[in-house]
Length: 234
Image (tube, rainbow, N blue to C red):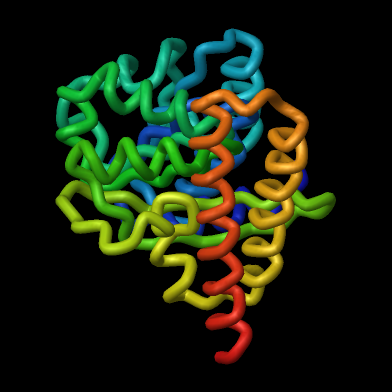
């Protein structure tokens, strides 16, 4: 099993826990590593796919971890009882889907202390959901895996925060404060994506919703460039 930087960072973000729920465990590598590294005493590895769960079960047997990892098939947090896990990992899904998973079983989500979230796309809608539903982002990290593939990994707990700048929805405040060596490349990547969309919108009919979208994207590009200049000076 190849350990990717994304997996390493997810594992590194997990706090010492009694029970970790690995939602969408797929191959089970993260679940196994949490036990082997002494980060978790027990792991509940779940997946909606029977084939993925078989991979996890095979890895558990191969590494002799049957007493430490339970496998469950089901959707999202519905595989858990209230207060059963103190940490949950939801990685490799879209940000909107992660939001829906948290909202669908909100009574269970409220009993989990820490979430490690790694959206593949739609990061802004996920941040919006978190900030508007009683969550705060304690830490964010960036991972780059080539071909302009940047991944954001969030450590999330319960609490309310006041967002002082709309920019923090599409470029996390913690990412800026952490000043990791990937930040400048990530900002340029986000600028490039927005400018690409703006080129496409320039060819569209000038409807009201198109104008609003163009105005929003142009504003985001300006702010991203300002942040890029600020970070570059550090």
